[in-house]
Length: 143
Image (cartoon, rainbow, N blue to C red; front, side, top):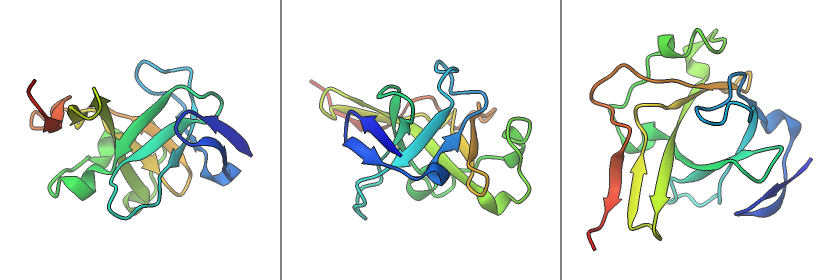
C-alpha cells in the first residue's frame, strides 16, 4: 500500500504496520489509522506518526523510555481503551512539538500513546501523574 506523506513523499507500507486508534487522538478523533515512520538512523530518536488516509495529521514522536529512564506508564491507564493481554506487548510514544526551526522542542509526557504492538491497537491516555508535564522542554533557546 502506498501512502502520501509531507516529510517522506510517497511511502510503501504493509497493512500489518497500520496502528488502529479506535478512539482517535485528542483533537483528531476522526483519524483512526496511523503508521510509525523513521529515517532509520540509530542516533535519531525522532519518528513520525503518520496518518494512513491523509497527509495530515502527522506528529513527530519519540519513545519516552529511551530518553527518560524512569518514565512509567501504568498499563491500567490504557486498559479501558485497548486490549492488553501481556504488558510486554506495550510500546509507548510521546508527541513532540518542534517550533521555529528547532528553537524550541518539547515533548508531551502527560498524554502518551500506548500501543499494543502485537495487535496494532493504540490509544492516547492522560496520566494522573503530577511529575509528567504537557511540555517537557528538550530544547529551549532564548531570542
